[in-house]
Image: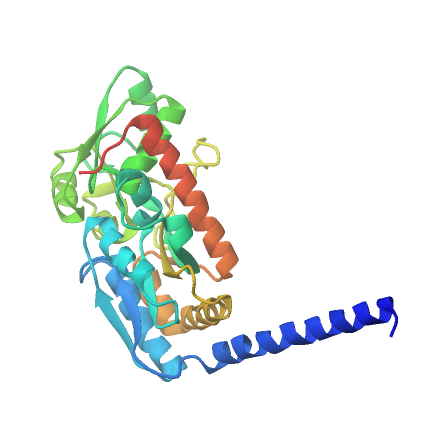
Amino acid sequence: MNRRTGLRTLSSLGLVALATLALPLAAQAQAWPTKGPIRLVAVFPPGGSVDQVARILAPVLQQQLGQTVVVENKGGASGAIGTAEVARAAADGYTWGVVFDTHGVNPALQPRIAFDTRKDLTTAVLVGTSPMVISTHAAQPFRSFNDVAAATKGGKSLTYGTIGNGSLGHLAVTLLAKGAGLDLVHVPYKGGGPLMQDAIAGHVPLSIGSVFVAKPHIDSGRIRPLAVTTAQRNPALPEVPTLAELGFRNFDAPAWWAVIAPAATPPELVQRMNAEVNKALQTPEVAAKLAAQGIVVNIGTPAQAQTFVLRQLDTWEKVVRDNDIKAD
């Protein structure tokens, strides 16, 4: 055997060895899950949107996978406590997390967080997005967000309420106001309930909250929607323009929900979970339940989901740093 032939033989053997190693991984992904339960860690307490998204997905995934799927609520620290549990879990495909947009903000607001979002976790699925809705009390004169902009540029300072310091609404309006030169003063509340109580009472002229929180009061006529923060209009509020439509170019600040896993989870299992969740999202029952919360379903790959999350981390870290924003 000459040297060239020997090298070709070794190369062929190497390829065969790699293929042999790859087969068990592919087979593992196809066989998974072989036991139960599969844990979906909802990183907020019962009753909120994260809990509801997890509980909408769980029974459908259980039916598709043929194994028990259990939702476990691990709330606290804006989702960081539950996320830390997912980061510490065995990377075997039996522990997944359901997170909210705070996942993209927490590292900047909680410098002592117990995990590294970029290194310790990976994103399997971007479940969907929803806009924040900027609204005003029905008695206020503003008919469009451009009226608000004109008033603040004319020397009038206006207050706006959010669900709390460091919330997506707070960061989104901070980014908007700084970019457009608007004089908007933040009033943080302790959650969506207190915010909406003051908004419908007219105690705060502007509010920003999720479609799910704001829509009942929009439907009742007590508050008037002025704009949504996503790049596209939301089907639940089709008449409400986007900020981009109103001249605030390229503005896009969605609320979002995702399924995450420990970073060491084999890519084949992440891809399998992605496929199963995407399948569930396309069932009429799941799609209708999510649409009722104003969530626009996203069908995409793990790579696309991870890219989205990393972009959110970069965007909001800069806003927090540049504006010295602190969590409650």
